[in-house]
Amino acid sequence: MTEAFELSQQSEQPSWLEAQLVPQCQRHPGLSGIYPLSDGLDAFAARYLLMQKAERSLDIQYYIWQKDLSGRLLYQRDAGGGTARRESASAAG
Image 1 (tube, one colour):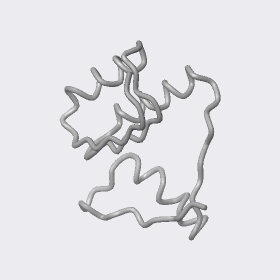
Image 2 (tube, rainbow, N blue to C red; image 1 turned 180 degrees about the horizontal axis):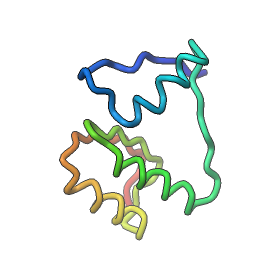
Image 3 (cartoon, rainbow, N blue to C red; image 1 turned 90 degrees about the vertical axis):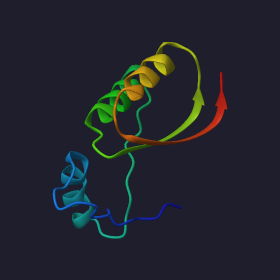
């Protein structure tokens, strides 16, 4: 079961992501949504592009973070980003 949540109003200017999500949340009150990405390249591209758009923080929840190409690219992109980061991982390679 998932829970819906209110997007916090940390500043008067909404972030890019808030601007995208608020209308969706208003159309579907009390619900949450997912968009499954079964193709590895699509899933990586989605994460990478969202990291580029991050303005305040990155809350990363990842099942396995390995020292493979995807893991190194995401880590390098995040390292110089200037955004706060909170990670939750079940395994690291």
